Each structure stands twice: as C-alpha cells, then as structure tokens.
Image (cartoon, rainbow, N blue to C red; front, side, top):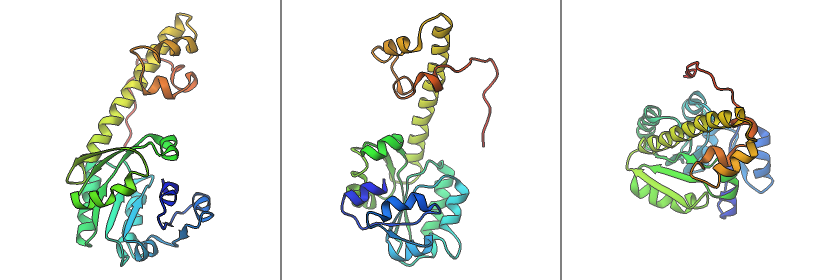
Length: 223
C-alpha cells in the first residue's frame, strides 16, 4: 500500500520497527522517520497499519507517539480493530485536534500489491472526500459506511464473519467428498464453476482448507 503511494507520485515518509519492511520503500526514495513523533512532526496525514491494539496505542500516545507531533491533522486507520477501540482512538485524537478516518481493507497482500483492495470508509465527509485520490491508488471499491469512525469496522467484521463461515463450510464439504473418494481437485473444479463457489474455494489450495478434520468439539474462543 505504501508502494502504491509512491507510484501515485506522493512524497512518502515511513516509520516501522522492522528495517526489512522499510528497505524496499527507502530504495525508492521514501524518507525515514525515527519515531512516530518525528513522522507526525513532518506529515499532516498519517496512515497506520499495525498488528495489535497495544502496539497501536503505543504508536499513538506518549512522548514519542503520533499525537506528540506538531504537523499531524488526519489519522487514517487501515486496521481491523473493532468499534469500541476506534471510538476510543477517535476521542483521544479529537482532544489533540486530529481527525480519524477509518478505512479497514479487504483483499489481502495480493490485493494490496495489485491495487485491487476493497475499502470500507467512515469519518468526516469532507476529510474522506479529500482522501479519495489516495484511496483510489489502493483499489476501485471504496464504500462509505457512515460519517463516524466505527461504521466501517462493523462493515469489515460483517465481511470477515461471512468469510469465516465460508471457510468452515468449505472444509466440512471437502472432508465429506474426500471421505467418499472424490479427489480434492475434481471437487474444487465443480465448486468453482458452480453455485458452491466462494472465497474459500477460489483462494485456498486443498491442503489448508480442504483436508481439515471434522470434529464435534466447539470452536475455541480468542480474545
């Protein structure tokens, strides 16, 4: 996604704890920020894509956090973090005069590289409108869910719920056909050219999603 910003002619500053993540961008003349604060002292629009809520909080707050910067005006969140967290972040940012725009994405690494991501957007309409040229570098499917951060999170989680259901159902169906002696490749050929086609059948090979062992145990819960 950062590479697409360079493709679009934008000046890009990057900050990451992993040197290997930044190196391909630095080689393309992106500039390095040593800390989130330095990034926010330089750029008025910051886009974040972070792996956990705690890392998000650390990047945002504290003496070296984004909100300690002097230039930041807009924070664009591309993470799937849930409604309560994004509202928590919005409140903290509002107190610092920073507008939060929520843009969770769907399409994975392949979609990011191809510029075919689907984006769910919520936040201040005028700010969203100004960001559209940037979002369009990532994909053509940009759906505005509402005027306040949180609506886009609900849209993303709804999408994820259906994706998970399809994965479970496909695994069960392929287990059944496999026990009947039908080769996985033959079954997938029918599914992907018939009414059973879904994201799980078209994007996963038989190994991870179609050889799952069916059990009667309830699914585990994660926090």
